[in-house]
Length: 288
Image (cartoon, rainbow, N blue to C red):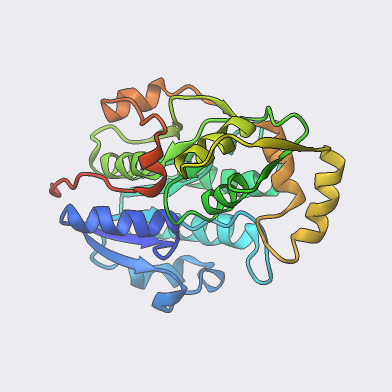
């Protein structure tokens, strides 16, 4: 296949580029390093030249926090929606949208709401679409995973409140495999939650990451939610991930049934192990 891949320079995009290329697909990368600014791709006409000779589209563009010219409405909703409509116009039927767990009817954050708007646009079109909603993704090279790994190596691990917020982490290789299967699945028009098999607390997840680094378990520094929020209002100016809204999403916690993913993949998603924190390898499959 000739695959147009947006967000090709990001965490998911890089992993997909490696795996899809190894499987024999040809990648047309779309990202700023390739001369395409998503902020300027807001109409069908902007996208049509890029869709020539394209068999499928995978949209991986995503930001966890707004910063400068990077805004949720533009990057998560307006530009992808224009791309999806351009696919319908150009006859590119197979379109995959990397959304996020929680981008559903319960969404309350600007992050999730902007993702859901693009999801709904894609689902409204007569295309062979997939909306893929991964939970917290771990593996080498992910910004959130790197941040949590640094937190886990501290002598005292900082957590919000009691640290019992629920997570269902998924390894990057399971996200990649889901995308690869979605590209060729005979049954399209599916919304799939991509989640790991284990539900863990935030505190326990940081301890797991610590163990993966060969460190003993550490004591927790319990930070009241109001204090963490106050720190985030300052920290957001230094790191776009340190957004108050991100803390609210963490505090809420997200879970999903992984059995539909098992049915789709034909196997269980991987249980976290020390080796997986430093590997994103996925056996290559030849393109069909």
